[in-house]
Length: 436
Image 1 (cartoon, rainbow, N blue to C red):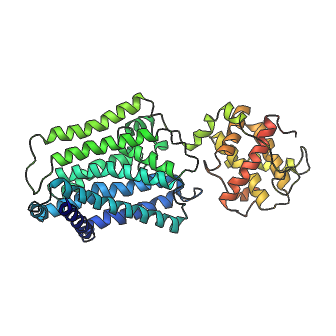
Image 2 (cartoon, rainbow, N blue to C red; image 1 turned 180 degrees about the horizontal axis):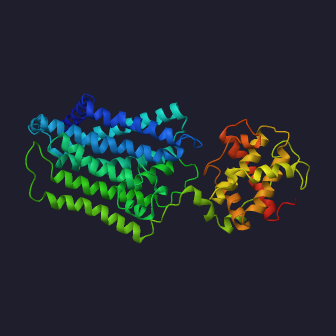
């Protein structure tokens, strides 16, 4: 047993050494994740904090690259060079050699994920996972699933180009309609349901919750189970079809492949039947799902007085309100097709004026309230204001409004925070809980 463990350790170290001598493995393990990080940063850097909502996708892409491309590329390249044929002569059982190779790849995948987290923090100031323990467990579950898939690809591919082709058959569907590259919220409902038959959706949802301080972890057990089932099925098929050297696959290979794919279908069917594939609404529609119970749960204690230097609000019919109200009526961001986003934009105007200490801040805030009350349905206004209070980081928020004379642009984080206070003052008035 001791000699077996020593042999596994030596093979583990050798596998890591050979990985860093393989340019393709380096590209898929470290370069591609950075490329995706920069691409996501160019699109989503306006988030608050930047990229926090996309880190589940980015980490999943990193694991996908290392497990479904890096692992089979290294194994097949070694097999083509006759390395594994020589391993067969060692006095170590095949399962131990495979285990050490998988552990070596797991170490490489974890290092590439940590590299990406550090890069995101340095380049975009993205925070670390809010739940590091859960993140570690989620990372292991996702890596186990994708390493199983990568091992199956290595067993099926005859050469390195075949690895690329088979890897893309898994990678591209999950990127396009599996919730990994394109967020589920922007996909049509049919694509969201189809994503439930792919492991990428469960990986993203599991890892994304680790970055969310308010995560509820509902459905986390199912996601972990789904990933482990898919990974185990693929791993068993890969072990059964494992080849020491290049050659023809067994005639029974198609049945093992079918068994691995059947695990995807089974997971998707169970998820559908148990309600785990509910459509994910885009952020612009999230406000319309705010319930009356959620609105009733909002408290209004501790708000600054209307005459305070923070969140100043002029009394009704104060001088200057009517003049600014005319400009507000023709302000395009306050009259978009989405009522919730329009109200968020209007509340941001009051927040910007307050943060910039504009001499008209009180009158502007009053004009915003009058505009919301008169231009929008009462129920929609309540839902949108409660959405701003309960989910301050959703949607888009302007940081300046030059058309309204607000040229300075305070940080978005502060605008969102101040918008919450104003939204509470407006909502309290609409509900009759704050006297005007």
